[in-house]
Length: 259
Ligand code: BT5
Image 1 (cartoon, helix red, strand yellow):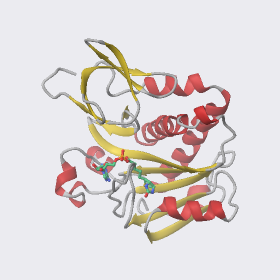
Image 2: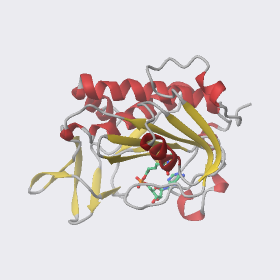
Image 3: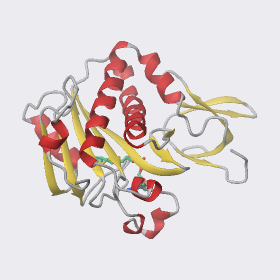
């Protein structure tokens, strides 16, 4: 039963305010974020969600791809945030913290968050978050390598990525995982409106990089010790010349250093 996903199975016992209502479940799609955006353009309410069995054009951030074979949890949710502009970046952090809490609750696997929002299991990426916004709508995309055999991932990814199936040695019940993700992510998203500090605290408690020596590559190369995130969600890196906030960049851990 673990591989079977239906809206009915996910919605049974769903305790959310609005996440997953309505919920549409698809077979093979380009990207669930595209479907959710179309729904939003046609007036779908906050919380409307889309799940797909497989994506052929799954996206990451900044034009990167997201490998999305059958067995994964590929989910998008329509959001209509009533937030000041400077609070919108917190949506991604809330989603990361919520998705991590959900995977942990559903499987017992301990999930950390690598800035900005990679879900990490045993030091490898097991999921990711993509928030795409336009005017007053945000489309929240969540991808989790649930029942994906490791061999299905391309060679280039296998060293850095993992899947719940590979790590736990057994499949997870996808509908239950989807239900828990919808619940936990909604809880954390609601906190962005009510208590943004609590979102940052929940995220910091799972920070994968804090205390590690990192290399930041972007407009500028920075080598230093990660210190966590500030109120805007920027990664703070301590270097010889002080603490630098990092906003958009790729960060890697310096392998030679003890964690
Ligand atoms: C992300 O981007 O991690 C966001 C992923 C969001 C995927 C969801 S699935 C539902 C919704 N619909 C979509 O089309 N997308 C969302 P980013 O931080 O940019 O990471 C992308 C990088 O992760 C790639 O360049 C690869 O290195 C790596 N990657 C790709 N597929 C992966 C996978 N299945 N597991 C682990 N790593 C992967």
